[in-house]
Image (cartoon, rainbow, N blue to C red):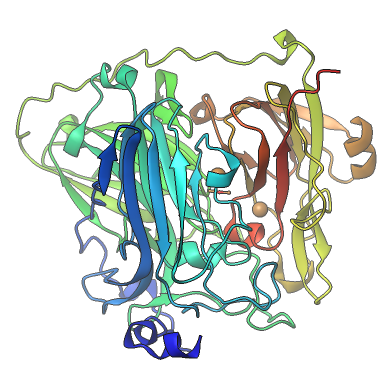
Length: 549
Ligand code: C2O
Ligand code: CU
Ligand code: CU
């Protein structure tokens, strides 16, 4: 172990400087860098049974902004974001994910978390988020491996065209590995989608949106402890809120666009922060997005949206028609509030589109009205009657003087409780009683938990208010009583499609309907706030064979 740490390459990867001050966002020139577009990866070989890729996780040098130094990141093939993998539906892909990272992390590792105690700091395993894959290729958090090891994962891509993303999922360090840069896009196309005349090629652009904080030298800052500090040091924090917006690896970038239609696959790959996105023209008047897809692919009909929420891991596929804005500048903005409920002034800007005067060629793409057949699941029409599972978003002491987030008071190491049968349909209900805002260690009270299930795609049925003061969680989990329910809310207009991540909002019960299909075996489900996932809001999900008794 000593020898490896001595090499120049690994030393350069450890340049995390304690004590270098945090950069104030007001000192950073906005819209100075052009938006990078991650390159599409070429297969190492193309066999009869599909494409084969090799991807090397390694340290890289990256410049986040024109005026910053080049600093250390972890990247797939040393790049951040990682290269994009593109495939057609039904064409299998194999990827050898090689770990050539150092053993020690450049960000502060909490050694008390599961997986971290007694193991090398840098452990990795790749998860393809939103994919239908067998359990041994899913990147289970305990399947991590270290430097000079590799795993070959197989992706059948047997699902409709959509925007997936791959990212690290190693137990106890996921938040740090993603923050360090281990994330990339994975796009599945299909023939149906190709017949729709949506903007294609260079007019189809993925946007990985993240909030980050930098040090004065332009390197990544990640807190080593919470405020006030917890008794453990370094310690996982409850939430990471960056002060700067980064898109495809650049701080507040701009993109030169033609006055024509573009498709943007928007991904919130932030650690904690949820955003509401909107577009402003030069008069600060909101301009429309035309939504064509959700996490799981195309929705049934194009939806005109003025704004939409996007929490960590959620994707939204939109068309923006710049033909009306020739010569103008359009700004992508957020409406996000910080944890104290105040507007995040600096982060309201995300990126700028500079619209040219004339399109290069005639725009033959369309904004079709009808997109794809979509069957809305009606719980009343499902036989046999769906099993209902109830979950409460809870928190518990972790035995080290901190609180951890849990689900029904259970964490990752507690025995599995969810054993859905393959080919069954279930309804999952998540109640989120808000936490006491005076709880120790500055726990944010009203945070929405983006809950993600591996393997499956589901639909959101509704959200319903409930009285958190009279809520009896034990009763409710057991038999559905002990709750005073209030007003029902339809899903947000942007949520009517297949989803793999759902925003579980405080003060509400959120209901989803989930068909379990394709594979049996051991997966996980968790909150996609990475600080929650690591401590300890993740549970086993075990899909079982049909019980034919
Ligand atoms: Cu994108 Cu289990 O996560
Ligand atoms: Cu996933
Ligand atoms: Cu959470």
